[in-house]
Length: 210
Image (cartoon, rainbow, N blue to C red; front, side, top):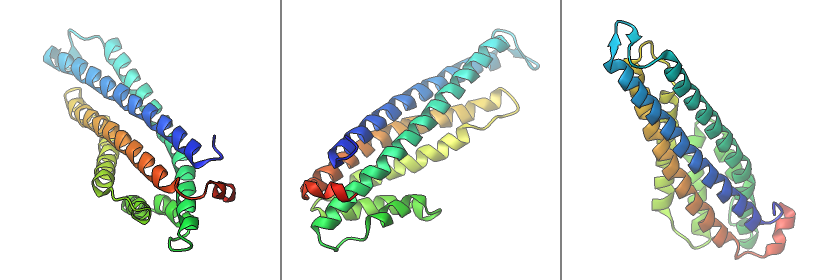
């Protein structure tokens, strides 16, 4: 399956769906902790939460940690599958268009060069889609904005405030970040399918050169 463009696309889509489910689980973990923290703050006397034992708060913290780790693992899996898929699609289009596209390695560099990777990836994908006769500016823009916002809010959500009351803001922002991550994953699936459809029109034998 990994030897063909279509097989790589299918695995990438599966990984994105799993990442979407992980985002839902992480959002629930933050909502759960937010509810517990709110109950604790409402019944707090001094530094002691009367109605919420420390063990309950601890379990909520553990759940957030587990879902965060799961989300990171899913993100790494998506990256490991996305890059070979994008390279395969780029190679197909470059071969079909006989040198009218930049080398596929330039598309991969767009993801790994610091600073450049904040803007270049969707521009590269937009150029590939245009080269194949497809325009998807709204899809790419929505995907990338949601993705950058999700990452930013996820970083803020890892904050460890000194008091229970201050924990509510990071959890709330992290929950919003998870919702955006879910939206970004769904949009990314649309990107994978669109580019695969465009690139699949190229001669299938070219996959052997990847």
